[in-house]
Length: 362
Ligand code: SF4
Image (cartoon, rainbow, N blue to C red; front, side, top):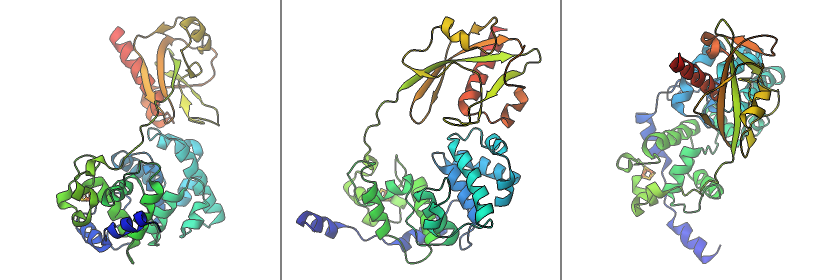
């Protein structure tokens, strides 16, 4: 160990996990997937909620979780559903790869594990759609295993407690090590959830409520007055932009034409509004774009655009509308059924935009 490392080691504050557990006993959030304190959570509930919560907020996930459990109360029920049904229920939650992984994982668990979740992180990691974070969360919360559960909330808390100035994502390893050294000797599941709750309700990105934090006395960032500056993040590179024209075709009954996307790639197997390819650089000029329309007819190009952000690129869409039918590939769907189709958010945005513009024009 170098002199600098040994000096830093001495400075490492002693964090008492029991203080956090005592705080959790009084302030734990009530969440639909959470068991009451002292009771073991159902692994199916923990797994389902953790997959849904990846890149999505608790507020957005709660109604979906309740809806899923209402439709598929057990793992076996979910495994017996078709992928299309799962997509339909998932529509609006985004990141649809998760829905595919969820369904595949449910089927594997039923076929190869007799419908019983393994309890160790290593075995959980072998399952589709379960990465290191989710494996640790299930092991800790559903099986009370000693597991180091580090999500974005926990990263923030640890970065502040230990004044970690290395920018993320480089700091991940260091933060994980800090989190590991704080693990309690019992109540691993409660501790994991307590840390998440502390990050979500007290050690928030802006205006952390240090005055009510159970670790305020030992928190380096609070002492140094730099809590809001941590964790440091490298500036994200600007995303590339893609352009396309979407074609909203309505028949005489007011239904719109949708079609299924290819089984591989972005939004695989989901429903979509027909469009030109999504290409970088400039979008196609209208004369070239209209060649991709589902019918050749009297299309009206609407003024204004639809914008959507994906993980790796931004999308800007022009929208054209027309009435007609004829021999077209796809499915006619009435507005009342949009909710039950596996329609990603971007497609809903296009449909809502077209409906609004058409109403204004009438
Ligand atoms: Fe976060 Fe403040 Fe608690 Fe430190 S004292 S962990 S900055 S809430």
